[in-house]
Length: 118
Image 1 (spheres, rainbow, N blue to C red):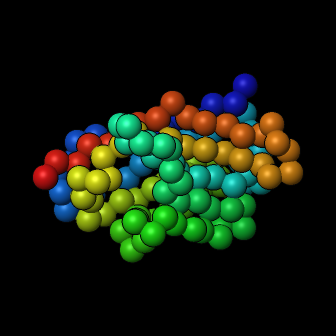
Image 2: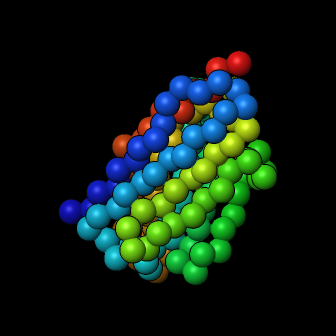
């Protein structure tokens, strides 16, 4: 059974920092591409940051220079370090694990709320 469990969300003032974690189980973590997505009220879910099995990263333009994604294959965990947070970063943040060669290998966590107050 595949599980992705996010943690680290919360309420923070603008300019503050948070680190999100996503612990994965039930998958061969090291071969999966991992991603962080977010969904704000009334908006579509969007990709925030991704990291491939080869540690290649990509970021949404809105978070470049402020967010950093990383992974620890030994701990089956992916992280999202967020600094200089702004109210527009307020959303539910979701962890995703995807294996491009297998269309059904696409898993989501339950989400963690991040709220940035002005």
